[in-house]
Image (tube, rainbow, N blue to C red; front, side, top):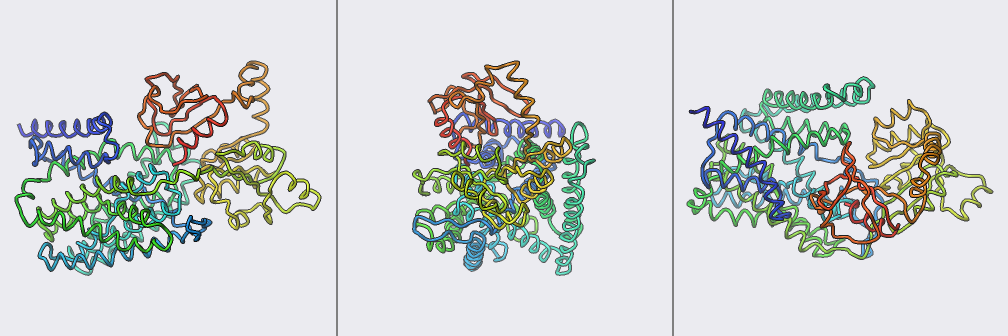
Length: 616
């Protein structure tokens, strides 16, 4: 009977985890994060609702693995390129230059931590909690899982204010996780264990250097496909090793998982591997964890305790104050609506509060009722803060963003292409070595060429080329093309396109996720197509009927049927490329994120469509 009950509970949780996003989609509750919806569904089937789930070994194990994988993905989600200070600062509407994002974010987080510490002592004096340090971590933490998608949806991820908000959340995530590990080490096993944390971080450094040494080896590439999938195996081996090491040195297992995610992020994994890890985590283990959080939460017990009932609004006020007071520092550069909206978004908190509450309850620092109250408040912030942010944040509809395309190497190929790309969507620039006087006069009469001393990474880093969305490398030297393309990709440039005529070099660049073009291959392909399909070539080369590729990156259109697509105009959907599949579109075709839409139509309308679908 016990075995039957356990299987029944597991089946119920799995089915609920499967149905939750479907219900959200059908009811159009797009403002509600899926993980929050999973907790709410857990409340319905758990102790606060029908109480039809009984926790057992299966659910406990899968839930723990989900928590570990959630912490791993939290570390993986940290984009360390955001810490770069080389971004050219633009002028704000106020006339002032944008502030240095990293410096401002650091000051804001220090302010958040100081205000949180002060508020924590008030909770201690009021008798709600005995440990002010744990309360400080709970109040100061920020949810990257809520902040990142909200910034993307608002199309401000790469803006100055977007980078500041992101950096504050990243710093909060890193610092509070490390301090939580120190807290556990000090309070759970004495001062001696704190020094053992250095063993864990030392192991992380060693593993990073090992990973960076071997990740680009050719034999690794050959083992990354088929039934081997060495990259995925390496990631899971890393997680398990660091989790085991964390527990050995007296730290929490989630610190090891978080550290594993940070290491993988630092090693710049290819996006296909990241997608696989996201799919596994958010498709299986993590939903079980969040549903079980809701199952274990007894709302009625919290509401029957007047002290806990009073704590809910007080804690919400504390969370808001801890973010709104320090964020006022941004008033020096931004308007009050932008600042207030940013403060509300930074109030969102979830994963680390659940971690701190779970650990605090296990250690006996807080009661089960207090733990449940903290989790409930975290869920509430994740629901209402993104909504307030969207309502308050001023929408800049006048300034249209352009994709910045940089060409390295001015020649007969890049110069006319850069000229043809100039439109409302693209902003192009050419970089070339210092020219002879006569050549310079001819080129400058038509093209604005930016001179650099030589074709090297050092020379390029002295320019603002890193701000470009797409960089095309087409110098006369293939080795330089490969060297620059590889270096720019490692520096975090999203799209790099390089010219090479060598098949060996082409394979190497593709492995590095650099897009490749070859004049010989292009000419052969064009000639063959001209012989076999002259009509198709006419479509490809005619400006009015050309084929264009648009990548769907705006989450607003995810899951939308083609028949309900809101844009009308001079455009036809020809194909939808999804992974390795080529889909013939029709009215009931559903659009998915990262779909590549092959369309034909007028250049003006295509540019408008690209701006809406691609710029996030």
